[in-house]
Amino acid sequence: MLALAISVILLSTGCSGSPKKADPQVKKPEDKIQIGITFDTFVVERWLRDRDVFVSTAEKNGAEVNVQNANGSVDDQIAQIRYFIQKKMDVIVIVAVDGEKLLSVVKSAKDAGIKVIAYDRLIMNADVDLYISFDNEEVGRLMAQSLVDNLPDGGNIFEICGPTSDNNVLMVDKGFQEVISQSKLKVVHQEYCDGWVAEQAFDAVNRGLAETTDVNGVMCGNDDLASQAFRALAESRLANQVFLVGQDADLAACQRIVEGTQLMTVYKPVANLAKEAAAFAVLLADGGTPEVPDTINDGTYDVPYESLDPVAVTRENIDKVIIDSGFHLREDVYLNVKQ
Image (cartoon, rainbow, N blue to C red; front, side, top):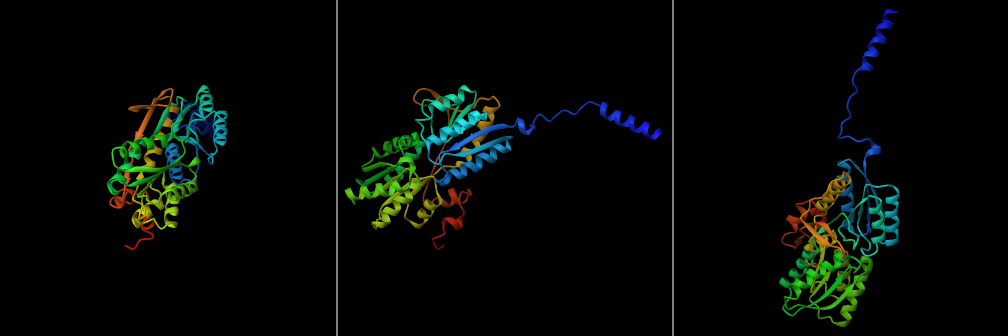
């Protein structure tokens, strides 16, 4: 009986003490920040990198991320955003399939009290809480300057762009034309590839070659398009004679650069972009306001704009920029080149 009494006293003493305070930095699973992110597509190599870095960064900051892939369909993307609204996400991040067609569903999200980030591509007239991307006009200037520096005066250029529904395409072209207009180079053929469908670049280059084979350079909206432009040039036995430029630093493009069949690509440190976007998403979910230096007009509103710098990559600096940074492995870049 004495032992039993002592046990009861000890248990009672343990239960009557002050409860421990919960660590304010640790949230219960049901209290975690909820972020929904919808991508245009995963066909383009770079978006897989963006996804992985964004998710890992957000999770390290205590958030849960629901990733959706629209597979190039604006209707599917709208449905995904509506799903995020229904799930009461704290923040929705959008890599827009078509920046002109998301106004209504973005308004619905904002009316529901959900913060919206336009990732890499501006959503027009939507008054998003943040637009984060690279300096796309500078991307165009870098591509143009590379051609100006390497093509003969009076040389002819084909310009194979992405879709006009992507505002970045217009910004890249603005920067490109800014430099080309100050040179003696001439754009003799220009086309836009709907939905960033790479195979359209193959047909576009062939249509240009049907008009003239007197071409010295081809500007491509990204390296995926450049792969198909290269195929068209190769079939016409022009691959080693025409200077090809693109952007995104895809592995195939980097391989062509060291092989001598692509002049340059524009490297965009997407890991930095994804990390910053994830951090901003968590900040917005916590009620904070991103402190960014710039704004950009979306057609109606001036929205906060975070702009990262792109880098021109050529044979001269590819080791330092691409390999030393870990973006691609040396053995992969130089796969087809004897060292």
